[in-house]
Image 1: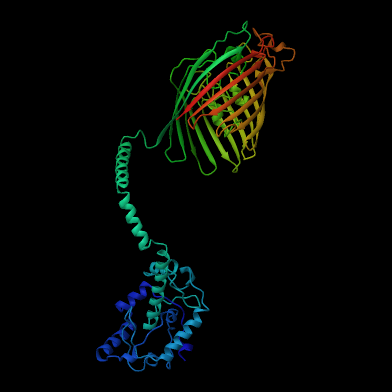
Image 2: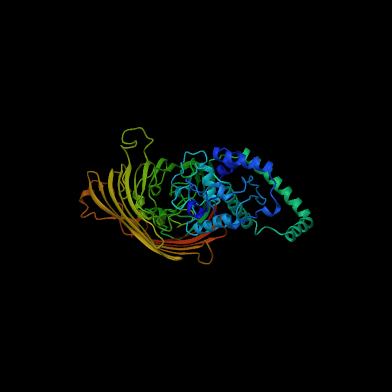
Length: 584
């Protein structure tokens, strides 16, 4: 009959239940426990009455329902006398009918096979999150897996607890704790392992003492370094180039080139305040000049050198900008000083666009960027997807100049937009810019204000270590109050990476540097003193970057140029150069 009245399930004791059992906080349970204590003082159970409870069988037993029928009272469960208090970790002694216990165990087993284990406190519908015992109950359910609840998804935490329910719940939790301890200590060291470890410790005592001394010395040096470090937010990195170049063949009637040697030094102070932003301050000094036979053609100076008239060796602030993210999809660039044109785009696409590690001449950079100004400006980089970005910017080299025809918006400057696609197989860049230069772009010998619409496209296919690409630049230019002409350039690139060793690079670059054409009958230039010859030049550059180690590379190469100065009256130029790059 008891199995029909008691609605039992595999419930486990929570810290709240333990407190109720030990401190007798529940009035119903306190009265029952007092009766048990009185009975214990007046009776001594016989040895034959000692009950050995099967923990595995009792563990699933849950509390009885709040309504207990008259024929299923506590007296029916223990008719002889009030039961003694539970003795944890000992055999419980109670003059209880074995048959009654068998009924309880049987019903508990039946219910436990039909009720799934509760894995979240949210599965118990009547548990109030504001309850003082909520966190304890959560731990028992979600960390230790000790709670099952009633078949209807309730916990009924406000009802009285019987001694049987307390014993069953406590036993189940202790079993679970035993499982956790066993699983966590199964792979611990044995006595034999500890003995072996002790023997090894004695054998290598001298080495361990030496190592301990080194660790102590390292901690002392680290503390001293932290106390005297340059900055907690700034890292210093640098690049030093030492190069030598020699003219092999050139038109000595038009040019006078000599073998030269020189250097370029860059020190970058990279500062981050949030871990995602970058403030770069770059100092630079260089004295490497370009050959006149190459520099007379736009885009054919040494990538790491000055123009033919340069070579001052002065230390200058070569670059100053701040780049930071604004949301998940937008990056902002604030260019303060000498920010280059290519800094305002995500990528120039060319595999050779690096003055220290790429091509030896500036022809390695796509020529459309030579028609765009850098300097003080604002760049916005919109990440349209993981592969596609839209870059918008405005920059002027005359931003700091407070005079008529200069300043941020009244002097030279460029508006630029580029759509960039980057992937493992192919990189593509489509660029447009509008540029104004008060002194012109240099294709006419007389300085005049000029405006250009610059169009450029660049692509680079990647077939493992082999990369094949190229691009085209086109710019219709208007000489103010004079007329229009066109500027063109095209190039092809072939790169073979890791040839002969990791980090090495074989590069071949060919095509036409910038040249002007489309003058028509030339009548619009009648008022100009001279018109620069505009014959189409053709350049070929080959180089091999040999990586000595992660910080040193040596790059020898050859450069061949037809029609130097865009004049077919000049014979071809051939020059050799060796560049050694140190990075730190």
